[in-house]
Every structure is written in structure tokens, then in C-alpha cells.
Amino acid sequence: MATPISFLSDFGHDDEFVGVVHGVIARIAPEVRVIDITHGISRGDVHGGALALTRAVQFMPDGVFLAVVDPGVGTERKAIAARTSVGYFVGPDNGLLAPAVAMVGGADLIVSLEDPRFRLPSEGATFHGRDIFGPAAAVLASGQADITDLGPAMDPDAISPLLIPLAEPPQNGQVKASVLWIDTFGNIQFNISPEDLGQMGLSVGDDVLLSASMTEYRITWGVSYGSVEEGEPVIHVDSHGQIALAVRAGSAAEDFPISVGDPVTLSRPDGGNRIDLKVVPD
Image (cartoon, rainbow, N blue to C red; front, side, top):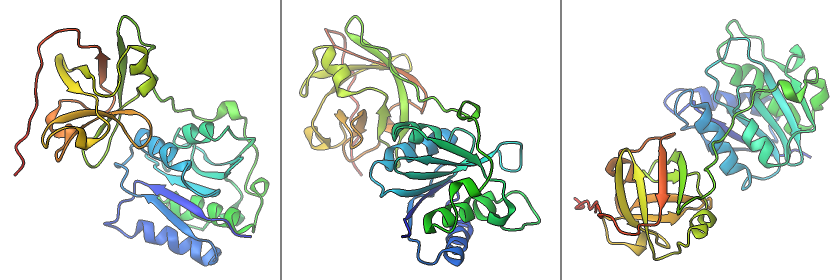
């Protein structure tokens, strides 16, 4: 029985690339359903693609996970498929697949996609989503081939990792962390859990002191955006269970000088001057 393919890439929708990969899959395995996770990953942003895939995988049906964010296309990097308890992961060996594979319990087999029977012939070597990854995903999802047919097994230790930074354990009433992700609404996600704040004696309704870019901001920890007035910032637990910073009816990314990867510190206020950011809606 065919299983679905969950597809993520940095292809965008301005060109024909996403549609072409869909077309290749449909020609090989017309019965296979393709679910588009996103094609809006920033060009070549392997870290962002890996995080998006990791966030999404727990909500996708078991099957094949096709991910293509591949700035190293045409170089020595391998094209791989990994077998896991929830299905197969197909994509470049650049760290893109590693966090999601680890989250579902790891892979018991990883192969290099080398068998020419499961590749499209091409004059160029710059569209592996079409020529290598799409066909491999299609035959795996449809059962036309076993993963062992696609190429030789690889040593798992030889696979490129991608490490997601972890926050330091809370100490002295503060936790040092970093920005994991900024979504399209401008919400800023930290690599901090609500348990980390709880270990510092903080709870929903308390103020939290956010230190970033040499500036301190005293912000309410709310249940949701509605916990504050329009234009005001709020610390909250986002849909992925992480601590995040938002601005109601606004964009935290526009109001705070914080970027992905930047270090931040969250702590108990215990005094200090409050810096209020309030944006007047248009």
C-alpha cells in the first residue's frame, strides 16, 4: 500500500521547481499523495529547514519525508535515504535530516542514493530534488523498491550531523539561551522550555527579564497574545512547547533587535528598570 510523501524545500513558488518534483513523483507513482510542509525555507538555510522538519514531523503521517535544502548540490556531499520507525527520510547529507531522524528515534539503515535505475538522466547536476530525491521518495512511498535497492549502506557515524543548540541549565536565577527560530509573523522562539522558567520560580503572570543585544526588557509571561494589550510584548509558550516572544497585533522581530542564533538571557526581574515597547497599530 502506498504511503504519503511529506515534502519540504527552499524552492519557493516563483519558479516551477516544486511543481516539477510533484510531476516526477506523479509519473513514477501516481497513487502517492504528496503533502507540502513548506517551500518557504530561506534559500540554502539548512538550519532553518532542519528545525522546520523537526517541528513538523510529529504531525505528519508515517511515510516518506522528502526534504531538499541543498546549497551543496553538485559537490561531493552524498544523497541519502534513512529508514526509521516512522518511515523514510530522503534528502542531502548536509545535516538537514539529522535532527528529525534523531527525534523519531534514529535510523536503523542509511543508504547512499547511487543506483542509476532510480535516478532521472540529466545533463546538469543542480536539480537533485527532481533527478534523485523525488524519484527515490516515489519508489519508496509506492513500494516499487526497497531502500536497500537504492544504493550501498553507509556508516551512521559518517553522516553529517546538525546540532541544535541547547540552553544552559538555569543558574543563579537566570537561564542563558539563544534564538532558535523567527516565524513569518515575527514571533521569536528561544531554546528554553517553560520548565526552565519554572526552575527559577517563575510562573504564568509573572514578569520576566529578557536581556538581549545589551538591553534589558521586562515582559509579562502570558498564556497567549491576548494576555497583553495590542502593541505590547508577551513571553508565552508557543505551539511547539518552547518559550517565545511575541507582540500582540505586531511583530517581535521588528520591535526587538534579535536574530536567529543570537544569545539571550531570561531571568527573574528582582528590580531593575522596565523598558516598555508599545507599538501604536496603524
